[in-house]
View 1 (cartoon, rainbow, N blue to C red):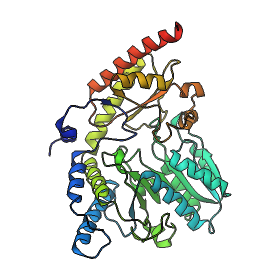
View 2: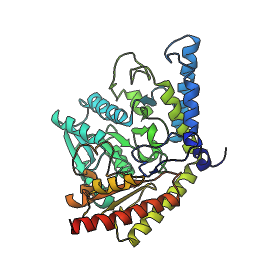
View 3: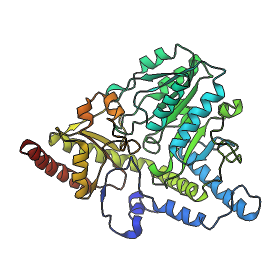
View 4: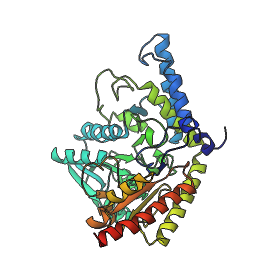
Amino acid sequence: MGSLKEQMSRMGGGQPRPWVYLDNSATTALCPAAREAMERAMDAYGNPSSLHGMGQEAHRLVSRARDQVALALGLRSTRPGELIFTASGTEASNTAILGGVYAKAHRVGRRIITTDCEHPSVEETMKRLEADGFEVVRIPTRGGVLDTEAALAALEVPTLLVSMMLVNNETGAVFDVATVFKAAKARNPATLTHCDAVQGFLKVLFTPAGIGADMVTVSGHKVHGPKGVGALYISPALLQARAVRPYLIGGGQEDGLRSGTENTVGICGFGAAAAQGAAHRQESIACMTGLRNDLTDRLVRMGVQVNLPRGARAPHIVNLTLPGIKSQTMLNFLSERGVCVSSGSACSSHGGHTSRSLLAFGLTAGEADCSLRVSLCETNTPSDLDALCRGLEEGLERLVRIKRDP
């Protein structure tokens, strides 16, 4: 099959890429394996719930994709309901949190513990729960380090749910969720533990059992699969206790946990992408880590502030702060030169708000508004970093001069 980079070089029908794309935390290019699986699935257009031959063919394809995603998560096999497909990572996290909270609210306390830098799909859900009378405790993550002592102290009060991301999508900080999840279970086995692992899936080595998570969220388009498909792992213990209520109800698909006709084409693409990513995981992590370290060194030599987490770092994210230049201004400057980066989470970039993640990290509001996120994948090359650094150097020279001499 060749290396993953060789396989991915066939993207776009072999045509050269028009952009230097360094925004892989927002979304990734569709890999050839996913594209091929999706094309095959288009011919199996039966409803996976139908009992006739066409329906059962579609059902087999969905089952195969489920096994592929499960294996990439470190699961050797899955029971019914243990891995359900959703329309996105956002839906998967909403299902885990709301489905878990409202199923168990009458049995455990009303405290919920999370972090102060969660993705909007979790943070906005927490705000809704607060409006419904639940107590939400947000644990500090200053410097990209989860304050585990504060989390353990918060667990002294009976806790219904602990929901924490594995990797921050803006800084690349890897959080020690395992310590908190395992402590939560030791104090009260009925406490639910949920991990948003969208940015960690296939980038950081983990398994649900290894981090002590009852539920884990992943997403297809962050790992070279298609948009519009995510997945939620639910532990066998939770399934047996019926500790998660369905978020979407109707036809009872996905073992009654997520109603709605399955997106067979998208699911097959996700499965194929997950299988390819798992097969080349070590190679990909090594490639991204090398690029990340090289970029970090070059930025430091340029005099650019790099917002390095004090603890563990994911291999694919570098956050930097520009000297008094708004991130949107530099983003536009780079885009005009064919270089794509972001000013933060794509899910909140249109809200006009200062990044919660960067404020939690310890940046001032002014610094956060002058910060960029560079996010890599295994197909990026040193020449991509050359283009970025050239653009940054040119942009800094021109934009600082314009600011100084308007």
